[in-house]
Image (cartoon, rainbow, N blue to C red; front, side):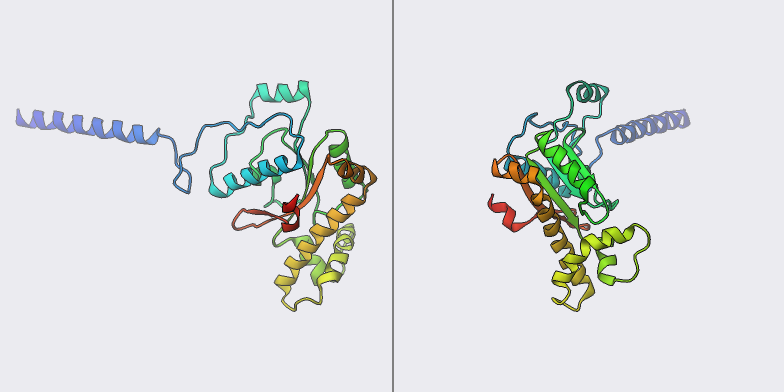
Length: 247
């Protein structure tokens, strides 16, 4: 009799423990910084006409990314249909390096239809890339153009180290080389030199974009803002150029 009671009691305790374990397992997972991962879907105002307002959306999104509190993207069929029927209304154009560690949509916590991205190694512009920037600014009425460089850029490193660049890689190195010439005598430290060259390369790409008659006209009409930014790989932070913060 006592044995039967003991077996029943053990079975009840086991079932209760299992129920608690299952309940914990089904609870909402916590993010790495201790905050709960929310179900809030990212939404923004449909029409953004100010470059300053657009930059703030990117700054806020990057802050969420750094803190590990990114919002849920609307990747639903309804959202895709809406973008198909109504067309795209991105609020920023981002000229970014092709580096796999620097996906603009991710680091700025933006969703489908939010940013117009032009990517190539070294975040440089040729006529094709510049044409894409002009299209975004003139036809899509994008109020903000961001040239996004990053730390430890392979294209910049190849330029600083010199040597023969094979194939069409040479065209990228030639684009970055004027930036290297400006900073090469500033330090003997190769790592520091690469970062200085990357910073100068961002400025050089901005200057090339601003030479465009289309962009120049839109700037004069206060319809577009062109700024520089740099992504820091380990921290995940994007810092915007100090001189651009006065706008």
